[in-house]
Amino acid sequence: MNKKLIALAVAGTFAGYGAVASAATVSGFANIIYTAVDDAAGPAAGSSAKNPNEGKFGADAEIDVIATSGAVTTRVDVDLNLTGGGDSGTLEQAMFAWDLGAVTLIGGVFNNPIGADAEDAPDMDFTTHSVVYNILDHQTARDGNNITGVAVAGAVGPVTLTGAFLNDIQDANEENSLAFVVNYSPIAGLDLEAGFVTQDDQMNTATPPAATTAGDVANFNVIYSIKGFTVGLDYLAPSNIIDSAYTIWGGYTHGDFNFKVRTESVAWEATGAADHDVNTLYATYAANENLSIALEFRDGDQGAATAPGNTANAITGVAQDSVATLEFIATF
Image (cartoon, rainbow, N blue to C red; front, side):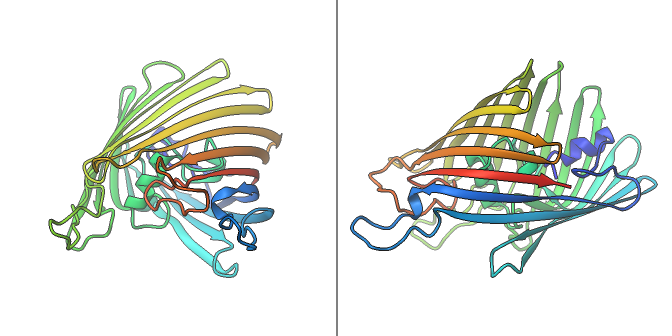
């Protein structure tokens, strides 16, 4: 489901991919990805080992169930993937949205409303998530970039205000997180968002102790669309570990075709740490109303003298690599 569920709930358009929220409905998608090139998974120079990722298909899927009774909508999203021998299922969302007139009350496990990148493949602008999303995902204990608690949202003219009381996003004991989000659309095609979430400053046992979480996180993103063109900026500023991260992208839609380019960078708080940079090219074709086909080429740079074959950074998701994929997204 689109991660901007709070704004959607306030606007009265809380529904699934192919469903209208009234009686119980089922919607979802299947996401199939073929990896043509993956340098990071390649064997070391001189090795006779094979690349375990290149030339392979992968698949994941989601099933969403929505039911509305009066002013209350209940939603459960279940993610399915090939991990663990094909029997892996995780709970993405389990939540309700209660329309109280002036405000909407949302409770349970739900998509993090902070940041521009969406959670699910049909809503994403690219095949891969942005570095801003990856950092937020790393900071949330739930599977995916999801949070647990209650949120209250209300519209004041063109502005939607949201406040949330949550489990600490890293599930620190006896701690809670607070989140605040402001969405504003001053003119047609222009969407502005500012968000802030707190979390416990967890420290390791080193001397002196060092932070193991990104601490409080501030985010600002803006998206502008006009006559088939779209440009966007997503900027993240944590209080620990990372100094800042940004994603800038632009795209053009012509008929059933869409073309996008994205550039990203992460600057670390530690003195002398090399930036992580990523550049992405993307093209998609709407083959049918429920099927899209996409090509993506992504080039990552960890900024150090690191050869391809290293693993992706746990926080940013960036590896020293080039990856080319073919993606099929089928919705129902």
